[in-house]
Length: 127
Image (tube, rainbow, N blue to C red; front, top):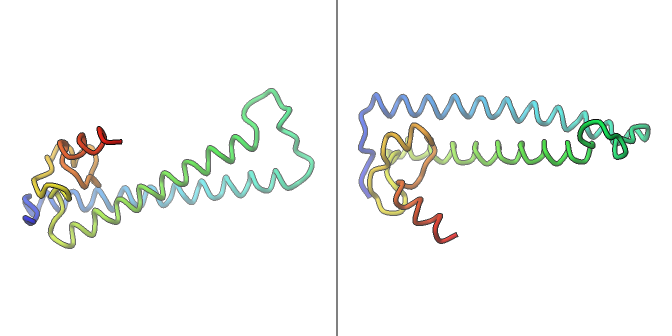
């Protein structure tokens, strides 16, 4: 497999972008956890009966929504960590499937991309 095919400056920019995004996602997870704690406390107080409240979402709906957002953020952090490992290994920007170059535009839109656009389309078509 070929090594990274980008300049050191470009690689440093992507690495910074990945770290910044990871930091933001970590903060979001903290907020989701705080909100989930509040929902759990409301559900456990025995007084709240929002299941019959016509105004807004129920606590169960809110719990599901927050849990989903927390899972998505955790999955993104995992993908970012894999991308940072590829930076360290000198293969960031190289398609994990075909070994070709991942276009800079794709990495700008999705800095944790592991596949070039052609391989990503092919993988998506199979699912």
